[in-house]
Amino acid sequence: MGVVASLIELSPAEIEACRSDPAALQRFLSDAARPRCDLDKAWAGLHFLFVHGDYEFEAAMLDDERARKMGGYDVLFVSPRDMPILADNFEWEGRAADLAKYYDPARMAGIYPDIWAREGDKALEYLLSFVPALRRFTDGAASRGHGAVVVIG
Image (cartoon, rainbow, N blue to C red; front, side, top):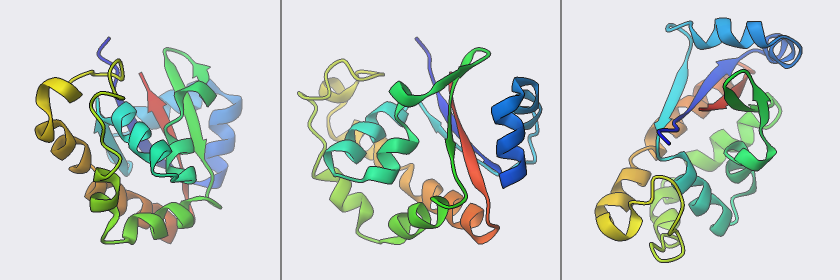
């Protein structure tokens, strides 16, 4: 499968451009200087933790069932209106410990990359290692009044 996810910061106008023109999305994806948060293959495991932890905005941000196909990617947009909520949620210092409570390798069977039972606590550490990067990314985007595109593919 080999599917990874990245969040790429976009202004409100850039989000609208991407919604109407897949070529615009491709330009932003190829811009290495643009603020981004790469989630590697952890995105589906994080989505599981967010759903089971009842973190609505975080879960929606990675919900590939709601994604739109654009080129070879599944794409979701995080509105500039929602970014401050995400930033506030990720600012909570207890976030990683709270998410850890929802880690359940048996219930995560079949969730990509399906390492949960085999790797145990190492897989949980892998998932939680992305929380600081999500904190920095959402805080920066929110401070600039920007949203993001989430690209899974």
